[in-house]
Length: 328
Image (tube, rainbow, N blue to C red):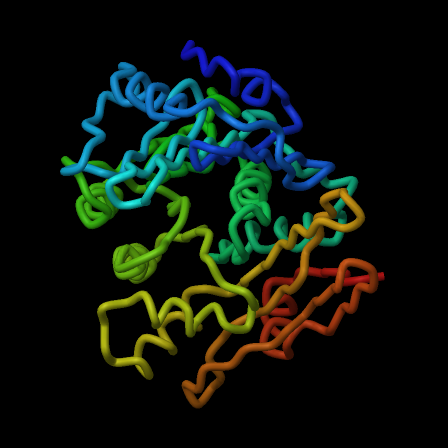
């Protein structure tokens, strides 16, 4: 195990999820207390630590003027560092911790879990949207835990942030790690031959969205996370990321294949971090082929508002002889 020395107590603290430093001051993000400063580093201390990190066997990367950004995973931690040649005058280090154990439980979100079970029963594709640190990855893991034990799951990721194989060693889970040798497109092409029931994109930030569309067009079910502020804006955010230019055609494709967008929220209130589901929206194409969307849930952190499912989905539930209670 790597010794982070002055940062080690914060690495070991199970309540701390993030450690960020600009070589001068160190801030941590606590699950209950939010973000706050913990210490100042001596001059040159972070640069020495980064030299050790880049040579650590699990990282083993050049980190210098020619390769000024370092990303990797070590001892279950996600490492992101920026060299002082492009982040003047200091280096930067971010350490993200993702605990192996599930952090989201049905007792705290009974309505949401009921919706996720319905989505899994009907084999829907869905997106967890939101800002950094809002809990998108944790919700993705919770949703996957509800799938039948026989479900085959393929994951495309840049690191092992989800720990799914550790969580469920008896399940049929394959994980592709994107790197300098294999990209998203090559992973997607391989997955199409794997006969996976669900394909998980840990996060789509750029043109990898087109590989997600390729998977969807093969009739595989997809679950992904996406940086988006509002559930209703999910299709537009995907259009922005895509290389494809036929927006009208692509919009109807998105509404055909992605049924749900769920947006978790995290906010520091009076020194403590509060988490909740902010919005849920549903998407479909009507009988005339027009893209439709509707908000079915919103919450400002205190007051919940449940709205009826769209008529399209009410009819779908009747077709499958399914009953579903939404809200109180």
